[in-house]
Image 1 (cartoon, one colour):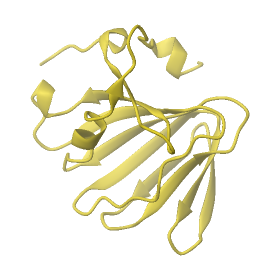
Image 2: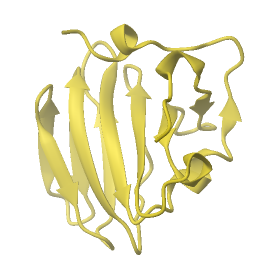
Image 3: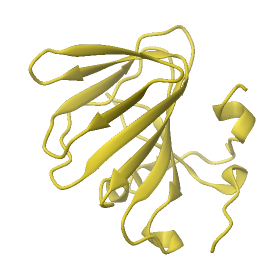
Length: 137
């Protein structure tokens, strides 16, 4: 067992043109062998690029804000607090913040893998998010 405190985690920021922030909550650095878990924080207008996880399934649970998942075939699904999406391996997708505030969601990869790319992003010095920053209960 390992205890992790959200406020002590590094905040990773993707480079332009797809600037967005992520926290890695649990991955191999914590001893996990079969999954990784993180939180995405997209500010107004921010989006991921189209991307594909070739070996990993992804589940996303949406905590705050409004967004849109766009699939490569043009299918779009609107998202809000309380929604959950499952993206099978090899399914290209893009996530977009369509709201006026932050769009915050938890993501789970199984098996782990994509979080290794997130850990290559720049870290944001001096910013430590809390649970209250991520989820308004």
